Image (cartoon, rainbow, N blue to C red; front, top):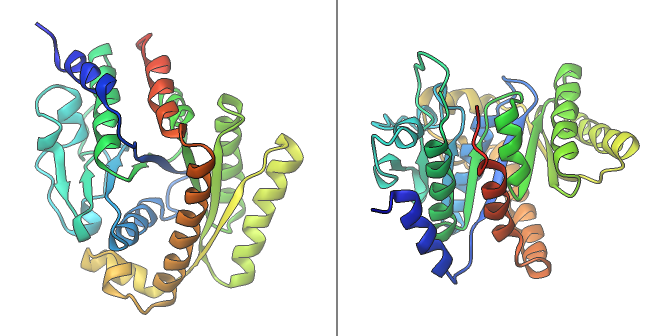
Length: 291
């Protein structure tokens, strides 16, 4: 009898439609507003009529559902362990976006098995068939398996702040990713900038450092200002882009999303096979299993 992974494998081989974009949102350290950015970025995409899914990859310590006041009954961990189907761990968010919770209250380190990797890979395949954008909200910092996953994802958005430690950690994260895949498309964004000039300076510093030491060109998405409505929205458990659409940060995010979408349209036209590479790389990386 074929298991779920084999069934999905056969379905994917027959799939002839377009595949969604796989995007990882990362940071070198915690506390830079990565998850909040991911939720509001995804919500803004959904407002524009895009089919969007968020996968909280901070397994056991996820907070995506908390940002929108939702109580996810099941998490990615439940799916990976075979306790629930994929449909059972996908929940509704604002404007029709979907999310998979990473779960909270982890009591121990997840003991990865080959079956878990199979389920992870084919869950991603199903998501790519059904959504225009799949955003992976990665845990802060780097582990061997998360870097392997990042090596397979189409494009990376790196979140930093203007703090020197945050800039250093963001550079380190990009360096780790670059070593595994020198051709990776990387975007940078400065969050919580106290002025427009501070945001520009932070992004330019990271861009120039990547070019100087790694000969790597990265794209600047822009910067988001420090704005008191963010904390208010977090307390209210509503994305700031919905609760305060006229706030400076919400209007700025709208411009950033449009810039991202416009760039992706150009890239998709030039490289229409990029999404298929994501799945190919995933299979290659995880086919050997992990200890």
